[in-house]
Image (cartoon, rainbow, N blue to C red; front, side, top):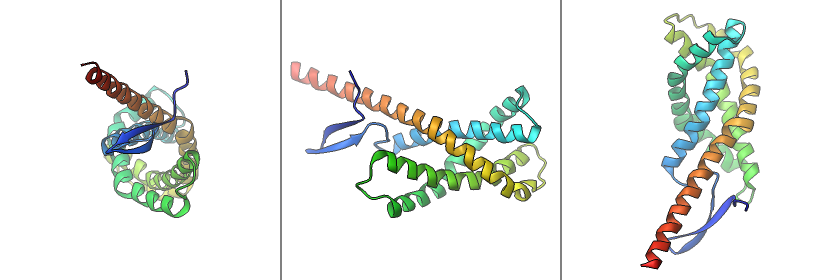
Amino acid sequence: MTVPETVHRLDRSVKIMEELRLPWNAREGVLYGGVIALITAFIMSTLNIAQNNGGLDAGVIRTSLISLPVIWVVVMLLMVFVVGRIANRGMRRFVAPTDGFNTRIVFNIIFCVTMMSASMSFLGPFVGECLSMDITWQCAAEWASRWPTNFFAAFWVEVLLAQPTARAVMKHLHLRQLRRGAEGQESVVNE
């Protein structure tokens, strides 16, 4: 049996089509964004810390895990209050309502990764300097050389790992909600 990607459901007597792979409300949006931010922040911070230390080792992983909560909060705040709003404007301008799911996802990834990689190429190292209590502002001087690498890496992390994982989480959540709703309706019918 194949699982559908979309589902028709009745909502206030109107039949609407819901995408199972995307959030249906604000709370799910936070979960969806949180999963993407967690995966991307961990991989990108590990990559950047490894570049600064000359390679990947246990110390790099430990440093990345220690800084992850702070980086994750910075990423979520930046996404919600700045990048997400700008990306939504770009989506309205360049993506038509009739465009398909994959087109919308790719444009969203391009907008978000461009802005997040540019921002975090400065903010990530700055947060690292703040956490180590050694603020040198070297992150500003190295921004132009870091950003292209970070964009390229973040784009593929989003396309191949973070976005598919977040969509799988949403699909699992929605299918569980629909099963619960169907079971509730069956019990009402059986009574």
